[in-house]
Amino acid sequence: MFLKLNVIDRLKLPFRKDRELYASFREILGFYPRRLHYYKLALQHKSVSHHVRNGSDHNERLEFLGDAVLESIVSDYLYHRYKDRREGFLTNTRSKLVQRETLNRLARETGLDPLIHSNSHSNSHNRYMGGNAFEALVGAIYLDRGYDACRHFLRKRILGQLINIDAIAAKEMNFKSKLIEWAQGQHVMLEFKAVEDHHNRTEAPTFTTRILIEGLDGETGKGFSKKESHQNAAKNTLRMLRSDKHFIQAIQEAKALRLASEEQARHPEAEEQAHPVEAEEQHLMEEAETGTPAALEQEIQEENLES
Image 1 (cartoon, helix red, strand yellow):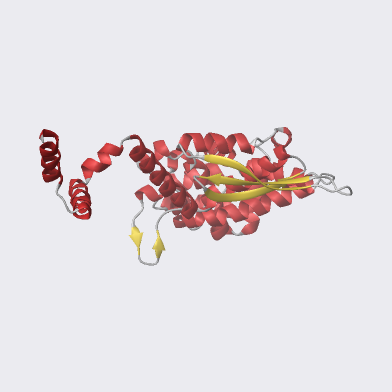
Image 2 (cartoon, one colour):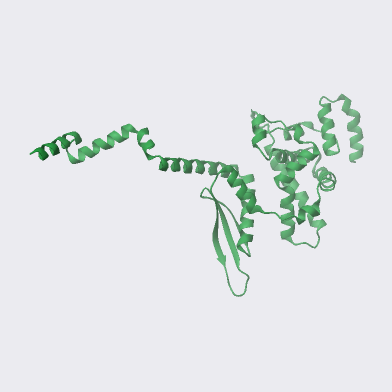
């Protein structure tokens, strides 16, 4: 079916308006797009977008859709490939496959990276732009060709050619280190807080850890050791940071308040100088309470000394 469609699309190519872009996507996907506007939208980073009445003209909505489709197809692939492995192994392997580092690499190796539209400032500060665009691309394929086309593209082109599944599955993922690295890069306070330890004679002990970022609650994680609970809490919080923009905004606001408080504690005189009127009002209130102006009181004390 794909071969037949590709022959027809190739015959139409010389008459198409965006011939070069169609050809570029043919190299990436293995087939020609039908509705190119979805793919153009997948390449549009929000840094160069414009507000439109019925939504937005950047790729975040497509990224949301592609994330769900990608996770579904990868889950199905792993379920049938590793028939004797437990749920924990399948979940960890899927996390490694859909993590941003892997998707960034796929965006580079497929040739998607150079096609992304963004301003230079965002490109230098957004480490995940390529991975986000790759997810948006999957969303575009889904809307253009359907779920089966997405599965064909991911199984044949990506999982079959560009990714060594067994090597990735064998690689240990340290989510705690990744979260610590993120916190250090953002200069935010990070805490792994023990929430609950459960011990009894009949069951193995379990541990629960909650992540706190700038004092704000992140996600929790459970495990049969403190190390495992730390890893699971970090993994869940990284997922939260990736999907919840309001949480990230709250972290930045809490960080700003902390820094302002620390600055005030280091330089209290600056705060007093910044509010001279308030300092003078306080001085006058103190004089009113004693009933005697400070200057007059000093004169009285000097007269008493002379007498």
